[in-house]
Image (cartoon, rainbow, N blue to C red; front, side):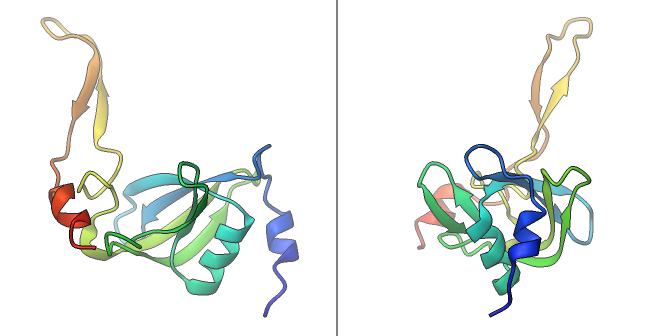
Length: 138
């Protein structure tokens, strides 16, 4: 098994031992989602070439797509200049990264106040699949 010590030491982990990880579509450049990684998640991602994150709500490793089938095949892993953000360039299985059934978790856009319209978050992308259909199969 390879020694990942230098790789893991280059990351500036936060107080909880986590680092934000952004998943970006390898072909289009679209930002799909943000999640957290701990050192075990990063190592599992490197070893499997599939995105593995740390689920803060479940307090365990989360292999993206484990319940939906929408895995993320990793093409590239990058670390930013400060070492405090990871970028995964991925191929998104099924074209759905979000648990809401959308291609991306980034489906709300801030709209500025204009005449007759209040500032708000505008939904820009409709779900591709109903989440109940995605998660009831598994």
